Image (cartoon, rainbow, N blue to C red; front, top):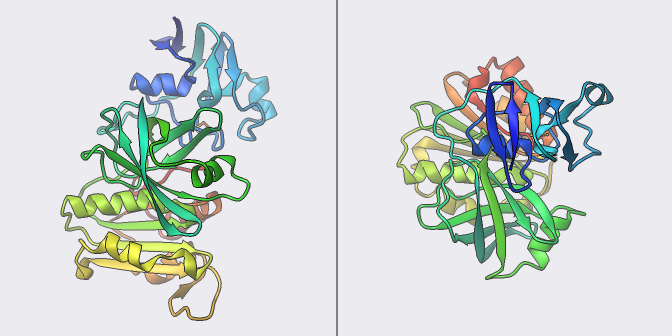
Length: 329
Ligand code: FES
């Protein structure tokens, strides 16, 4: 078995064709990361010694300058023997579960809209995660994708994911069209930092398009733990028919109306729509009166998460530690 030497201080085993990142996280070593998919660039490390297999050589997250300096993406680098890396450690936060692999069996597909489905899997192994985290889902011969959970926990042996069908997306097309009840998937996780922290602050959840899943997970956990925090739930989509009112009503039924504000928005005006119009960061800026002493959770396309981050940090002076998001590309 080969090994990964980190900063010449810690040596961990490198097993099963895992990337440097996954090996580190399985050993509770907190290398910085977000997407786990080669898209965000957060996991760059210095490759000081040894060779790796680069599983995403075309990633735009690594520049020519990085390559000249022998910098690699830890999430896309599989050691081909002993390696040594240099990295600035992230703090390891409490409550994070060690990522591992398990099998899920499809129980049900629930259509939220024609393009969005919630998949429910029964778990063959015990899996723990925090609301809002994500798993790498793989199907042999099809590929692997990161999907955020929509269930609050796995206490009942079930894990759920809300998936939006992506145009030209091979993986989501397979899930929508060719994946059937009793079919198996491999889950690897949990991953991600944008998980729910239970404290006394008001909760602001902002979901854009396909980013609904982790927000649903957090809302379900609030309901399950009988949280008495106030909830502001912003949901931005392009078309009215992407908002399933019955699904949202059912989701929010356990939270008293006096403590819950649901603010849906569409990006441009359409007939029969009386609600908010505009990009979701604009709607948040317009509708949320007080940005102080709140925890912000947001998920959606990169352009949306960047706009929300900019709004909160620059315009509203929200401290970074109150913003919870993972960037996916
Ligand atoms: Fe590696 Fe995003 S590129 S975590």
